[in-house]
Structure formats: C-alpha cells, structure tokens
Image (cartoon, rainbow, N blue to C red; front, side, top):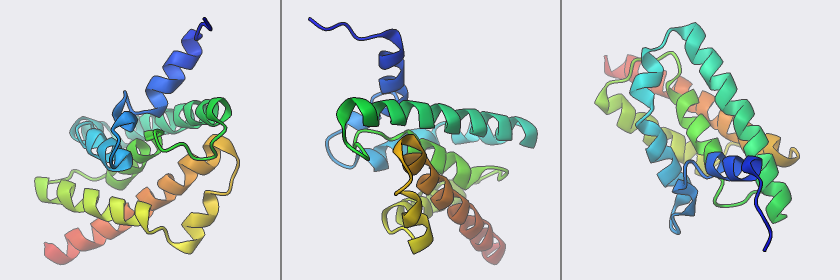
Length: 155
C-alpha cells in the first residue's frame, strides 16, 4: 500500500476547497459558494491584511493546484476549486458587501469564470498551478470592478 505524505494530504485538502471540489455536479460553483462564507470575515480586515491574506491564499493555491496537476496528470483537474475561492475573495477585496452585493458578486464572478473574456482565457495556458489560479484572479478582478460599477449605479 502506498503511503500519502502530509504535504500531499494538505495540498489535496487546499486544492479541493476542504473537499468541496469532490461534489460531482458544479464543483466550481460549490467552491465559490463555500468561499462566500469567508467573505464577511475577510472584508472586515484592514486593506493591508486583506492584501496579505489574499496573496497567501493565492500562492498556497498555486502550490496546491500545481501538486494536483502533477499527481493527476490533468492540466486543470475539475476537483481543484481553490482558484474559485481566490476568485471570490478577489471579487470582494476592499468592498464591504451587503447581502445583495454578496449575491450579485457571486453571480458576476460565476459568469466571468465560466464565460471567460479572451484575455482571461489566455491565462489558462500558463503552466500548472499558475494557469489554474491566474485566470480566476483575473475573473475576480473584473468581477470586483463590475460589482463596484453596479453598486454605484444602484446607490
């Protein structure tokens, strides 16, 4: 029997969003939904702490998703949802969202993540964890800008 290393177990747990990536239908949507529960705590942090936490999440996500790519041989394993987690956090960074904005930001991000703009789609071609993570970072940044625009139009 082959033993799994601690690093392998941790990377799998991180990459799958604490197991949400194993949901057989719509794992990316469930990863994004799971991340919404972190948003209120995340957005209460100072901007400096949000930046540090986001950078840590992103870099750990690159590491975890890269390990998963190497172990599965799949360039973008469907059970990897840490990219959606980071994409949701990027959607709400430096915003104090209302419940309506949480719902709207979630919808905008899922649309941006599924129907990627051409420049965002090109990021997917980067190797390993970088390609997995950077396209969702870009989708999150675009979603953040669209959410800010929608909030200014509604206010």
